[in-house]
Image 1: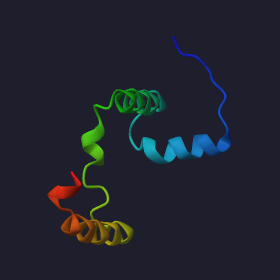
Image 2: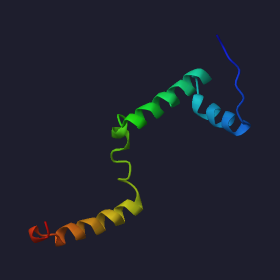
Image 3: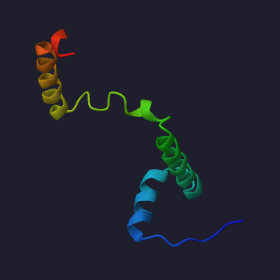
Image 4: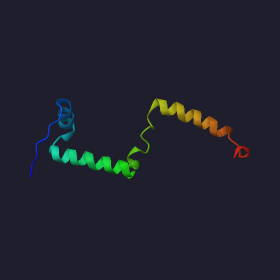
Length: 76
């Protein structure tokens, strides 16, 4: 059975952008499924490597490498 819900015009526009050929029901269900996976941590692999092409990450990575080179066993 179909139900009517009220959403803001802004949210409607966002949903319409991502829906493409899918129905609004499919889009909302997919978003809810993704939210549940994220809460469970099972979708963590989608985030792996996401910062690889980020300039800020390159600076952080460079600083970390310098820091790790100065690390020695006596600190452990």
